[in-house]
Image (cartoon, rainbow, N blue to C red; front, side, top):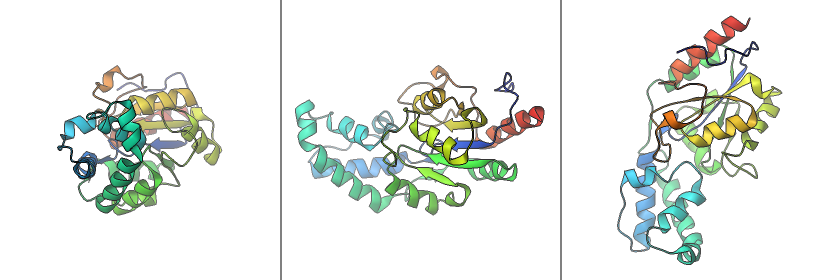
Length: 236
């Protein structure tokens, strides 16, 4: 792959990494929790594939999408609070039990850390789900900063959480790369003024990642770390 930031000569100092679909395959957890919630309403189970199309834009969007399979707009709103409570209870009970790290995640994080890059995790997952999951999977020690979908007033694709990380690290957005698996990540990074790399293996609302405007597609966090290192070597 060509250098993804040829026109910029400043080195990259930090990386903001998404969680679901980028570091962890959490779809099996969603599948279990969503179908347990649906069972409480007497609804039939749905497939992982159906759920994959709905995840990535936060829990509220997910629950409304699931309820909309059986309900009109008024019915969705009528059942939303109960559904969210049921879902959160089920998800917290199994959080991480069925999810797995994607290949190269730990090696990629190790390489980035060894290169002196500062690391943040920004996810649309509620922070009460994200924090224990990062700890359970051995990811927590790598990240100085973690923001969930409810940590700030706005979530991705709004640039707010990415800009907050830049402020936390006292870095210009042009010194920061975001890595994610969906258009949400890319749109947030573009709006923030950060660079963005995408992975092809996550959940992108049913669309090919090649349709997403990014600075490059990387097969793993290891490849991302190599790309950033190559750029930084050229920038010095």
